Image (tube, rainbow, N blue to C red; front, side, top):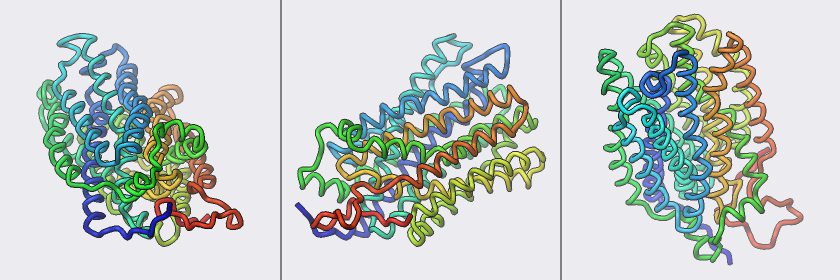
Length: 446
């Protein structure tokens, strides 16, 4: 059964973009707050150790654990997103994430309840990861599937500014609480950013409850194309695309976490900067990303998402070798320039991810396929990058090997970007008589 293409209503598109953006902002605020706390305070509060390096590694490892739960969240929420709909699933992920973050703000520390403290922290972190596993894919599809064919690069990139806005907000809140005296910061100040999540979730819920279901999912439901077991269909028919999406996200995922999480540890431990100094470096650099993402998204609509994706990934093979020397100057302006440069490369690559990755799967299994590939890739990038970099620095005392590691994962993204194709793409001489649905159409340009 075929349908006449439905032009997206401007009002519905605007509501979808805002609801996806605000929800993603809150989700990534929650995730970023944990990363900041893991780098700056959790080692002392929840993972005390005789060797400071071991304490830091344990703290950063608890950060990584959240990513381990993401694939399970991708499978569970992907199943419901492809079976029940995008809207309901996104409401559930937002509530679960906010509740887990709020509970972290209430946890007693190691000095109060002993080993139970890090155990409870890890459980809450797992709940964070579980919910985020379904959040990003759903938010992307809510926007992309409400967008016109020639605006998917721009509107998809706007969703990605939510992740950056969440990081920016988390850093700003942490910068404020770091102005407290150390004893107050350790006693209760660190809890404020986590407790604030409860108020933010209310805002996100209001926006998401007002949404309509996406046209692509509604069309799949009308056609009877909704699958009973989306994960089985993905594993049987689209496993290659899952792996390519996973490899494709390595470059931006690693770069983002290295700048937003590991750089705080590097600047504090190896450069001797204070905690507030590290954040005053990061905040303006992250603000630049908010502008760069939609610019690259718009450029992708003009030049093609694959070309812009590959350009960003190629830049991230080179920029680590510029970033570290600029950090080692210990001078504010060169260090800021280093952050800006690598984050602009990240923005070029990441801006295209919604439009590029979502079209690797047909609508009936798109939530599951994209979420699974994306979350698996984040385990191999965001999750382990800070701990890997800390281990490398401890073993070698040099940033060069870390830069080589970042360049290597970016090369894998370049290869994946060259190989990834739209779902159902067939040579012209094998094309079916019926025109393809706009849900599966994608501008190809490589």
